Image 1 (tube, chains in turn green, cyan):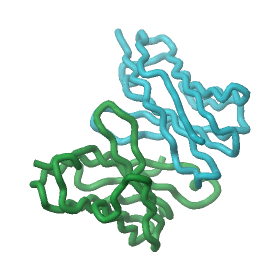
Image 2 (cartoon, helix red, strand yellow):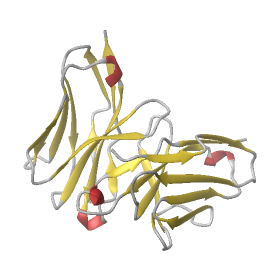
Image 3 (tube, one colour):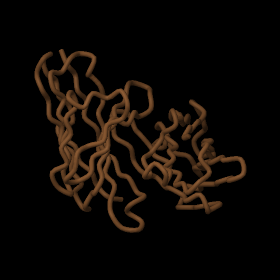
Length: 118
Length: 112
């Protein structure tokens, strides 16, 4: 299957600072990338959908000014958690969806980023 | 609407077959997926099936789809200790641009 990377894998930051997480599709072009949040022992919660070159679409209840998403190229999307607080501590996972007849329906996930805000 | 449900836990003996069940609600043009998540890791796409198919087999994995009952199952033959993980069922519907709706995940524990 296709490979999606995330960086960093773990990050610890102080309350009030901002953190950027990168998501890259390594061997395919991703017209659409998704950002999820996962709480311990729970399923994935979709935060936003980003399409290359356009503004992200946020799910209801997700603050767009707090979670800034940029999808600058077909292989890179970034999520910036601004003014982080302890309640933002979570496991953030991105996924990427390719183009083409079969690629459109295959969504590949990154390894996740563990964010801890102290 | 989209609502995906699956049982939360499954314990299986090594070498036996595992069957993980899932129900979904949307009967329109739909893709149904199985993902595997190991501790601290992302999701690995195992297999997927389109809603006009009945079955798909890939090595030790068999997916069965009962469209009438909107029931999806994943069978893992000859279950190994490395199969211990959380398995997520997900649905992608054309009307929602194939954004995935996930079940709660089934924790599979393989015992020796």
